[in-house]
View 1 (cartoon, rainbow, N blue to C red):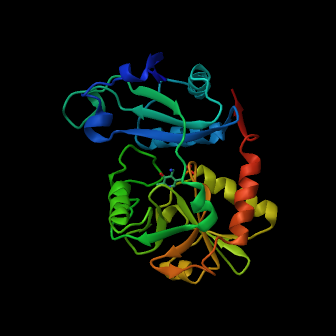
View 2: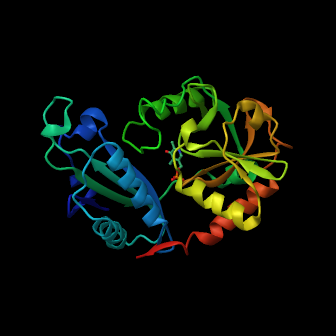
View 3: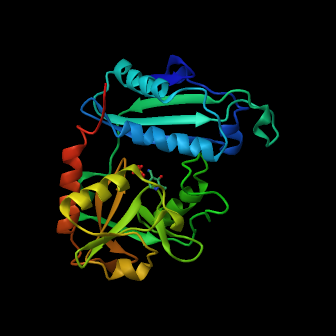
Length: 288
Ligand code: PMP
């Protein structure tokens, strides 16, 4: 496998960055996870826009144009003969001194890895996920905005570990006020009384690309959307619950905190969203 690293294609074992890179030393950098479906990079422009917003928010000046990054992504897929897979785009602050200040970092580094994807096993789509609320709270937006897809994922990793230790595959994270924020790598939705509901960005949800697609699908299906603060109670009494993310797509949740959601089976409306989502994937994006 060849990895794109600062303008060059290098074998994966030779793809190395400096131990002085502030991405490694401080998690000072940003990233995107993107899907390739049948030779089409799904929603590439949307991912690159979010990357630009993340860069702007952390005052990281990227010396590459959107077109250059887009071309490099497509070339990385082509060079690896990849038609379906997952693309990890990482931009670090670059090499600097041991101090915190990024002033010593002269040029950011860009890494693009395109590989096969390990999805949630098919049985989770058929049976639905069981998830649990964990004690670790989502970072307060005033400390570090969860809208920034930064290399600081420790908050989510700790939450994921808490769930894993209790035997759950995914964790529901609340914000510091106790409202539902999102899961460790996915946005969360419920369906109840003909409407879908998802937490607003200010509650600590990432501006998920899949979340946006689901909102478009809701409009097409004529299903009203509520983006308001949500509590666990809203989930417990919901008819359906599902998560959305680049890797997960749309995945049903049938149990939260040991409580059955709806009738304990993946919901019909969730199924409609998943089918509709899958019908869009190889059409809406950038062809290699
Ligand atoms: N929330 C978090 C914390 C994430 O890391 C992700 C991406 N895996 C998402 C939500 C979903 O975003 P997207 O649909 O853009 O993948």
